[in-house]
Length: 363
Image (cartoon, rainbow, N blue to C red; front, top):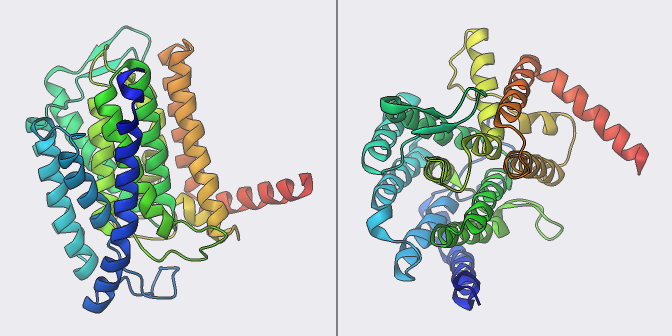
C-alpha cells in the first residue's frame, strides 16, 4: 500500500476534526461568559449574539496538533505559524474592538512582507500565461507575493458574510490543492492540507446551515477569515512557484478566482462611486442572493458549487491540455464581466431571480 494511503493519513484528519468539534462546546460557553460575541445590528443578518471564535479554534488545533502529530514540519512552516499568530491576535482584537482599516492594513502588509522574505514562497513563476513562453518574475516576485497575500487576506475576510460561506469556499479550494498534491506525489503537503480541511469541516458543523441547524451558532470572526486568506495565499504561491510544482499558476487563478473576482469588483465599484473602498456595504456577490430572496443555506451551497466548478475548469483544463492562454483569456473575460455587472447590484439580483424562476419551473 502506498505510504499516502496508510491508516494514519485518514486517522489524523479525523482526530483534528473531532478536536475542533469537542473544543467548540466549552470555548463557546466561555466566550459567552466573557462577552466575546458578535452582537446583532447594522448590516448583520443574525438576530442573536454569536461567539466569533471559530477561527481561533480551527487554527489552534491545526497548528498545535499538526506539529504534535508530525504532519506539519515546523522547520518549514515557522514563518507561516508566526504570521498566523499575528493575524489571529490582531483579528481577535478586531472582533472585540472593531479596529480601523488604517490599523489592520499595515498588519496585513507586515505579514505579507514576512511571508515573502522569510517564508521561501515567492511568486517567481507565472507559466505560459500569454502564449509567448514561460514568464519568470525575477525581482518582482517579492512585490507580487506581497500583493497576493494582502489581496487574499482581505478577499476572504470580505467574503465572510453568510453562514458557511467563507469556510465552505476555502475548504473546496484547499481540496483542489490537495488533489493536485496527491496527483503530483507531494504527499507531505497533501497531508497538511487534509488536516486543514478537516479542521475547517469541524467548524462548519456549527457554522453551516443544514436541516438540523437553522442558524450558525459559531462564527469565524476576523481572526479566522483573515487566517484562512493567509493560508490560501501561502499554498497558492507554494504550489505554483515553478514548472515542477503541482499546480500551474493559471490553475491557481481559477481555483481562488471567486473571492478575487468579488473583491476586485467591489473595490472598483466603491472607488468609482467616490466612497472608501474599505467601507463595508451590501454589494458583495453573496448579498445578491439574499436580496433575491434565496435562502442562506441554498445560497451558500450554490456559491460553493460555483467555486468547485471554477477549480475544475482551471485544474482540469490544464490537465487536459487546454492552452494556458485560453484559460487566461477566459479568466480575464469573466473578471471584467463580473466587474461590469457588479456596478449595478440590482442586475445580479434580477439575474438570480430569473434563474430561480426557471429552476422552479423545470422542477
